[in-house]
Picture 1: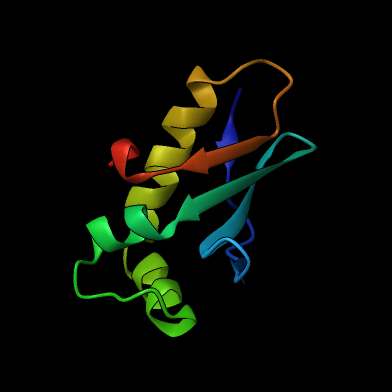
Picture 2: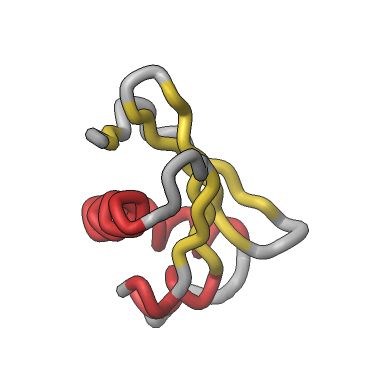
Length: 89
């Protein structure tokens, strides 16, 4: 289970006010969502706008990837979608 993030693409999901990003474990793509509360915990000055949340993601990318790896390692085998919340930081 080696999770990497070779593509630093991220996407704002306005319907749920969260950021989506992807990791890869060998050839399997793994989807991650980080909600606004987690991003605001990492960057308290951020509001819930698309611009602020994407900026908060970019500034905290190393911490977010570390949390994603931790959540992925603890996750259920065969699961390829994970949500990061404030409790993960």
